Length: 230
Image 1 (spheres, rainbow, N blue to C red):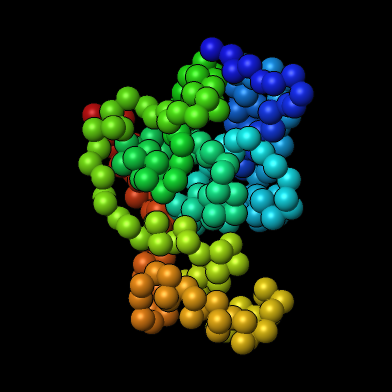
Image 2: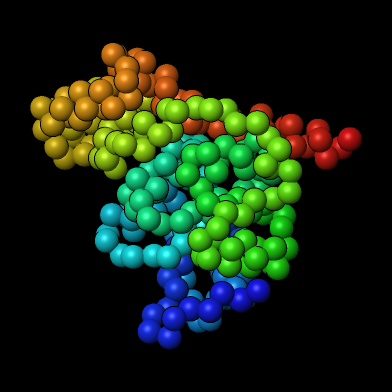
């Protein structure tokens, strides 16, 4: 199924994945789904954040959660916060239904396993651009975690999310101020806002909550390998 774009504008697609071959595969799937799309590839979270902060507009983000600089679902939440109206499809080599379900609960509009065919990828892209949700078979049967922390995290500004991630790395206020080129007073103000929005009272509680978004990819890869051997 090919998604027909308006004659007046090309559909702008942002692809965030660190593997050139898979970026090429996604670009091919995009071209198969759309009429003359404009595709912008990035290969790290740093590049992605730069593009999101540039003000450039996109119609869809295809996002790998496991590229350099990613912190599990936090990169997805940050992208949704930076561009609230931008639909996101997570693409992943880790194909557990739990990862797909969690991706959708953290704001994704779709989830594509990297083992999917070009036809399936194209179908997912067309479906999401049409305003619907796309997920692999069986994902809907996975029970929801019912975690409301993601909703609270989404209320943070992109800068506040950066500060929170730096807190999880153990950085002090002075170090955060230097890295972000802001004053320590501004850092303290961000932390106060973070605690209030997350409904916690200490930095430690905020860090523990933020780390719940991280993914143990090594553990999941082991589980996937064991499952494929059954």
